[in-house]
Length: 157
Image 1 (cartoon, helix red, strand yellow):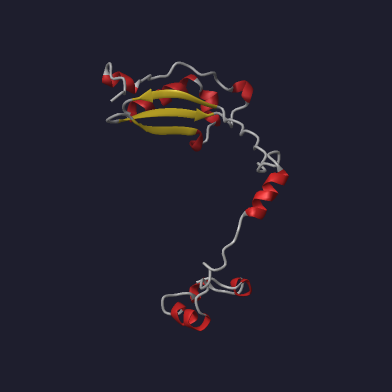
Image 2: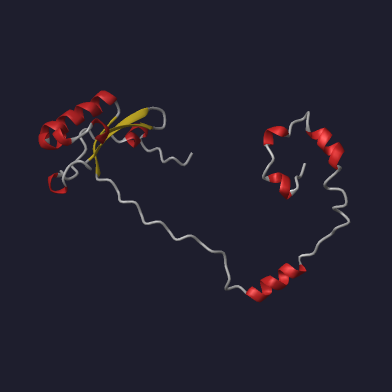
């Protein structure tokens, strides 16, 4: 049931229920009565569009600056979670100074879904490690590739 603009800002949506609207409708009548007799035209709009031409296009928002990427390295990828965590322990042993700077939330243990089973990846967020002390990416330990489970399966169906 349409409201008058004066009523719109003062109206409470909770006042419009199946019990209250029929009485409002009876008191105000059909707000849509006569809509078919008041046919409008878009001629003025077409003239305005022609006057403005094609140069006046939609305004677009300025693009946001790209977010700076976090310094994250992947250190392990394994079929089983204990194997991935063992790879994390070996990495920590190779980089004890860096490991000491890591907060618990800097160690990301991801469970990824393979075709039929899950596999695990461990990534390290080095945001709390000074850039000069950050270790470079190394070969993954362990380095599990979930695609090896399926031989020559190409994924084409």
